[in-house]
Image (cartoon, rainbow, N blue to C red; front, side, top):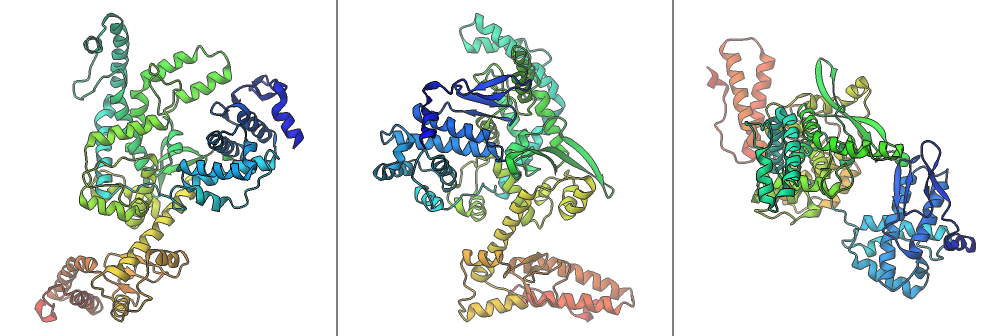
Length: 624
């Protein structure tokens, strides 16, 4: 421990230590710097949020991590150290402490925990932050050992162990947002180069006119008069801050996110060359290529692919070309960067799909979380869709951990991961059908998406593509949620039930059998353990875990038919009657087919009777 403290205190004797080298092998970052550029590891470390002895201690810990050749995930480890160090410095200084050794005293530690609870951070955040204390203990900087990280995180968290899922957007809201985003893409895509050229003219003229006019209104009016080749068929709104361009970026992001299921980081990895088209089994399906980092050991990026829709290509090109004037200005700034590694890193950010405006206050070319959040919020507000009572009910059903967050009349704001969860939910709730048709509202979408999710293993093998396992896990989780919702309704809420299994459940409910009245958590546990399973058919539900989805359920012992499903059988019955009548009227000798049709008609009538739905019984003699 003494050796450790001597290194940390060091009296600046360690400041000349070389922390990183550039690609030419020359020293680049020194220990004394607040920002370490780790070119070989592909990320930077900043100590600017720390002070005094706290900063000295954390520099020591991070330096040890960099030197540890046996550690694979250095980036994630260092990130946890920095974030934990920052929050515990705030807690300690809030108790008038001056270093992390303040933690060792029992009274001080209790005071620190009181300060920590006031931060109102989530359970998962505290679990990650508490890792920092383990690093302090392992390095013998503190003697206190935290053996129950999970229990302590639970104690400190604002909402217990509950973790709020990303929002799943209710169907009618998603339909409105997605269709509007697609309309924006189709409208502005043909004019993407003109948009960039006009904005370049406007900004240049505005900067010049603002030198002559004190009024922003006068400067703007003069700049607008000098915009060349203004497109007449579209409405472009010019403003120095780029609000309209931010709105356009929000629409493009919505299309890319909604129709890929990608994470925010993966979307940001796309570039102008990411979109490709591949052929499989006589079909052409669009694919996006990008980088996937989260599931990989060590945080090493890997190339992977996602099936999408053709409109995503237009969204990418619209983003790229409409912001090309900004990209050119950033490239001009790159010319003044002397160090080649810095210049190349800067240019890599310039080539992002999502760039900022170079004349604004930001110092980095690629748009961060705040910029994209502003773009999404601006786009959503422009649509003006306000949640109805039905939207709120669906929101609460799909987002039980967020129940009550959406009120009638509110505009639902969206965050990047909401698109991913919505993607997974609709794939499940629409029986792995295409998200693209959301209740058949988007008639021009590509049917290849449905085929992809029905046969993804074959296509992935053929196209040498990697399946996003994390998304598959998310879809599997949503499938469990969906089955839980269905079973809860069948066991506790459905007024009438038909079918063999439906009758059994109904009888148990009449008898007051407590095995039937299960709460959601009990049902979810049985679904997760494989003791409960349910598959939805056009005419009802099947509780056979080995169901192949092909049987007609006429005599199925696992069959459950709710009232809504029974109503959908009315039209099916009418079609069966027409088919039966045609066969009989033209005298076709097909007794097996005729008897099967007649039996199916009778089976549906039995279901309608059990649900007390009116119908006129079909009789064979009615065909003559």
